[in-house]
Length: 195
Image (cartoon, rainbow, N blue to C red; front, side, top):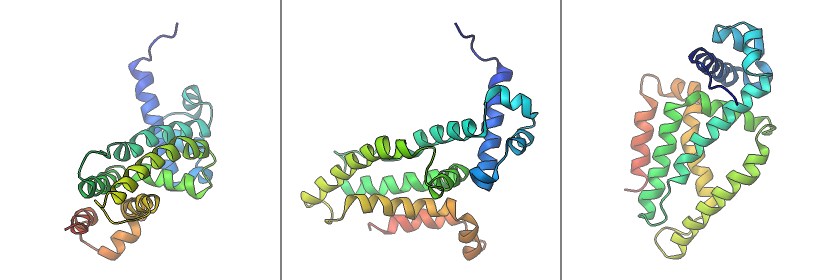
């Protein structure tokens, strides 16, 4: 029987994951090292290795946690709701995730840009099934004449691009907007799309 982790163990594990998120989202998987993660976490490398046997183990743990949170807004799409309100609410939820979790968004983007070597199976299985299910709902709304006849998969991709761009390309967005808060304007812009 395994003993539950102590407070120190939970604190150290959390510190490692938080440091890993900082390092991976800034340097990508290839540019990150266990030494840098350990230093960022305020731990020695041997102490870090007590909790995670490799850089890949930290990265995988972060991606698994991220995917749960990242997919929740799409799960919330209600097939019995008003189609336009449901789609726009989904876009707003995705924008809020980008604002609240920019490091996670960049971590995911870096993984995808590298060919998704650690999560490709999840993308092909779990993600594909969920997106196909939600696309079928959107297609049903279009067939019923409740929304325009759009390709539902590309609509979902467009929402991802429209919302995650703010986190993934934060430097570019802030450089162009200057002192304007990017997320306030983005949320207001989304609201105008269905008025």
